[in-house]
Image 1: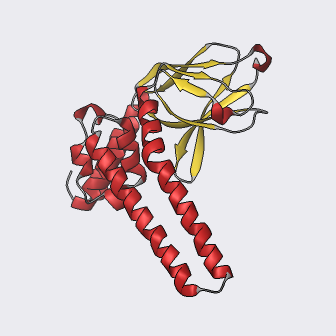
Image 2: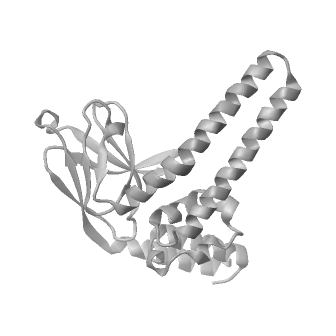
Image 3: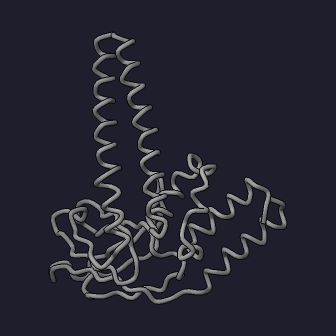
Length: 225
């Protein structure tokens, strides 16, 4: 991509920030938590960034956000409460807050979050469990000074990572209208960039920030505008 075309793409992305809209998030919690601060963060691979600070005590909070930021994966933390909740946020999402551990809070009124849970429960979590078991076996073989056996379990970890990517790609192919698919494509872009998955996504996703970012990356690879 030329410097001029990259600059024009950047301007296009920035311009969307001016089209903010009111979105709603409902956090239901006991009165004892009134006036506590809840922090809403974007969730990326390896880091999080604060988006909004919310004062509890109001059933529904109205936020001013870029219309093309949602739905997407976010994280909720509450001051002086254990844990954090990772969820797919879209306008109208309701969270029934668990006062023992925020991670156990219940998310409703979000179709994308249902799809996110489906992916995690059927693909991500089982893969993580298998991978962790392989790591344990590798460490066990190393303690016994059995390098060949350790290599076997390392190979199992590699195959599991490859299988997870294949199953994730299949989820994207079979759910082209899902914002979860768009998110998964973004965080696995370097593995998926030459698989034509971006082109399989439904047109309803085309204005989302994540789609625009990936489209710009695709144009950089192909040299097109």
